[in-house]
Length: 468
Ligand SMILES: [Zn+2]
Image (cartoon, rainbow, N blue to C red; front, side, top):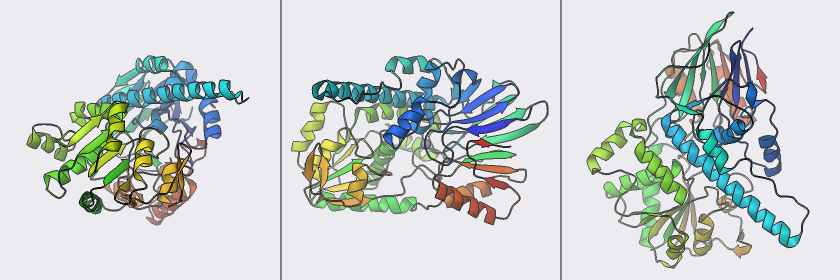
């Protein structure tokens, strides 16, 4: 038989990544991400699958973001019996992400259940997609592989993971496929990172390929250069410190928080910012930072050097304080600035960041620093769009503090970086590029740019099924 490719999620959209390669010896799945966005629609897709987990022969996880690993516990609870291959850092971070999700789901379910009992509404709360026990069970299927070490997830397929330079432990999968009728090399980019991101290495160049399944999230956008970000970060810290205000930074617990800490440490070392306390107010961030400390094998040369220079780790310095208890978090409200508070959730939808916003947004001495993507219909988006007043815990607040955006913290390559990455590869044998993991406009733009390069590779934006 001829091999087949298909996707269920992550095709013409950016969440729910699940890509399949079907050979005569079985089916290999790349990633098992959850759908995120409109609540009801995503919940339906996260529960009703268009494929049978029992029929999948092997799985590779490219990295630990929720839209790539978030449904693994359910995939296994529904009958997948074999291994999930990934790097060791990805396994540790994925466990944290899946556990966190199981806890949030349980909390939401119990909260809705209580509310229902009290008000007697007919809206039945949805059972969590999976429990913490199911995450534990899922971890038993993980099988870790080092970068560049060849393994055979299924008969006739040799796989090697290359550093994707996207988040700690992230990888691209390079597969050499031998079927009775054909043999070819195919690469799955996972999420393609960028050169110059702090802590982790640059994306590695994949060996020559016949097919490439490539992400296209930023297929129509460009990021600011990294140096510009560092200058802007130094300026805002100095400005707010001068007026003795607080800088509140909503950030995701994984990667963005560690990058910020790394940058603040760097500015501090270079004496470009004053000595002010930095609080990391999120228990998950503390756990994620522990994982970052453990995986030196993923660091770039600068980070290795930072360890050597400081005889300690660059994720902890004298003015940095990790808060884990609620009491410690609440005590910050009474404290005078200047200070920096990094807290989750990244889009200001839930968690401790809401308390910090409620206490800070009315004071013009303070600043809110936006470092991540704010999706539609989130509190973070309303603040960025200067919609006043905003509502936090049912109360109205007029935002009078400074609101500043830094938009080069993305872990995804922008379109120029994607083009540069392809230019660094030997593409002479590349027959087709399948653009996945992108919204329609981004994919259309990237397709146009790639076609304008004029080489003979077909650029395809697949739907669910696609032909090799
Ligand atoms: Zn990602």
